Length: 155
Image 1 (spheres, rainbow, N blue to C red):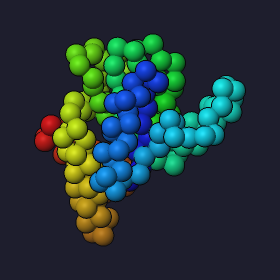
Image 2 (cartoon, rainbow, N blue to C red):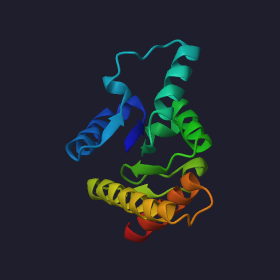
Image 3 (cartoon, rainbow, N blue to C red):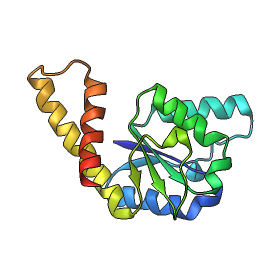
Image 4 (cartoon, rainbow, N blue to C red):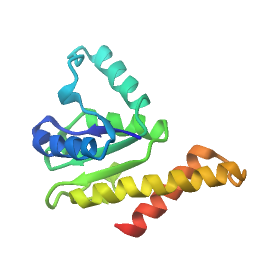
């Protein structure tokens, strides 16, 4: 499991805490704050984001009122949707989600991130069982559906 943490730069403190929480649990994450290869060139940055999203298994969108004005967060969510990554938002305070983020699970506390990880591990284990017994149609789609159902039941 490897998370892509999508955010607006003004939310760096929250993002760093999420990154550390995942690291403590032994889970890798991509965070642009610790990436020395970030460039301001539009084409290179777009390719860089796409490459890193393709290297991840999940995306968490840190959402604040500031994020509503980001041009990159919707782009990252769009790419994640296209490559069928599980998506969740991490809400700060009483933020109103834009329509494009309202579908996915909403995490509000560090404990919710642990629940997310637990739900992913549950889905992975169940998928392994289904795979071994050939009881599924599409492995990626089925595992994501199992994950969303499990996460929503424990949040």
